[in-house]
Every structure is written in structure tokens, then in C-alpha cells.
Amino acid sequence: MIGKYEGDATVPSSDVLLKLAETFGVRVEFFFRQRDARLTGVEYRKASRLGRKTLDRIEGNVREQVERFLSLEDYLPARPITPFALPETLPPAISTLGDIEDLVLGLREGWGLGNDPIPVVTDMLEERGMLVVQCPAGPEDKFDGLAAEVDGIPVIVVGRDWPGDRQRFTLAHEFGHVVLRGRLADGLDEEAAANRFAGAFLAPAPEVIKELGPRRTRLEPRELCVLKQTYGLSMGAWLFRARDVGVLDQPSYVAAVKQFRIKGWHRREPCEPYPPERPQLFEQMVFHALAEDYITESKAAELFGLPLMDFVALRNMEPTDAVVDQ
Image: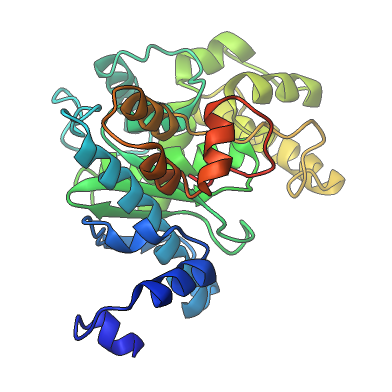
């Protein structure tokens, strides 16, 4: 019977729809969506360490969230964000990893970001035409991000429960793959290039030198903690940045990394975790559409994945135990 439903050979009755909705934890409206998100060009960075069932679960969760976003857009008179496009002034070719530093500065300038820390990477990317999805992806040592496309729109997936600095670096890393595609010279490692891009994007070279000084022999752990909280970049990543821009020479960098490993900080850093990112664009768009009567409360609740009563409480700023699953 499920095969007949999936093959459009028959349609489930209202009673069956109610049971299906209850089983899968969705509202009945879910089954009447007109948008069907098809992920293309799916790339996992650590797919070999994940089982097929886990991959299918992640992709299913991603598709469901993307469909909600696209469904919401169908109710709006105009697309609220501009189509994704990179600045035309970016260099067409990258010969060395060091060239990525200048590319990032040009990208930030072209997008009007300046060199200051980016408060919320998710919102910054979505406002410029990308889709960012957070999903219960499991331990970060097995899942290290996903990149794909839907209708030509770049999609980046990170773990919902990861620390904020891990989310931000993965977002920047996957974004780096998008930016660097077709630009890297033969022989340059794509993963190393994406890592260099991520560090440079979150902490541009001029800011690193401004914060640390042009030359150092060692960096204080507490100093790195402060920078982590300011830029949303881990202490370990700051060591990389210090080496990349020449603040630390190779022997000093190796000594710092060795100290991190002795203390176990390469697994768990000593300072407070950076708060996870909380995407706001989707939520803001739903309430905008609701305020303008483009959608009903029932549709808004379905887009949020909430029971109607819980959504009403959320709308009225009343306490609720329900978690908005974006």
C-alpha cells in the first residue's frame, strides 16, 4: 500500500493521513506541499564513516526543511533574498594557498562585510542567496558537514547540536568549496584550500595581525579564549591563523600544538564553548508572511513543524515547551 501511495496509484484516506501524520510527527498539511526538494551534487566530507541509513535520514531531514523554505517562498509576492552570486572581481585562478587570503578580502569587500567579526554566519549566507540547514546529524567526529544544491541554490548543512565555533567553521569551509570551485590550480588540495578559506573568512589576515601583532613567539591560552568568543573561531583554529599569516613561525606553531595535545585541548578546549548559531531568517519570514495575511496560522504552524496550539502560544509570546524545529 505504501508503494501504491508513493507511485500515485492510490490516495490515502483522511483516516490514514491522520495516522501517517501522527506516526511521522508532522501536520497533515505536510502531505499536500507542492514543492518537492531534490538535492543534487550532494557531497559529504566524512561519508565513509556514516552508514547508509544515517545518510538517508540526514538527507530526508534536509529535504523536509528545504521544502518548508521553498513552500514559504511560494506565498510571498517577491523573493525576500537576492539570488546567490559571487562578486565578479574575484580572481579566476588560485595558484597557492596564500592567494586565498586576498580572495577572501576581495569577497568580503564585494559583499560589504568589511573585516570585522561576522555575528551570525548563517544569516549572512542566507541573505545572499544560500540555504543553511541545521539537522540532528549526530556526533561531529562522524559527520563533518554536507553541501548540495536545490534548484541551483547552494545548500549547506551543519549539526544542530554542535558548538557554535564548529558550526561556523563548517559553514565557512563548505562555502569555501563553493567559492573555490574551478579556481584551484592542479596539485592544490581542495580540503586544505577550503580550510584556509574558512579561517581567513572568519578571521581575515589584517584582523589577525591587529589582534596578535606582526610577530610572536607564543600565544597565551587565555588570549586565545578571548579571541574565540569575539570571532567565533576555535582556539586551535587561531593557532592555524597565526601560522598562516606569519605571526607564528613553524617551530613556535608546532610547540603550541604539542602543548594543546598534552593538555587534551585538541579534543576539548578549556574556555567556554561558543554559543550555537540560531538561524533567524526563516522565522522572520514566516511571521512577516503571517502579518501580511499571506499565510494562515495553520500554515505557519505547519511550516514551523508545531502543533497549532503551540504555535499560537509562540506567536503570542507565551511560554511553551515546544521547540521550534527549523
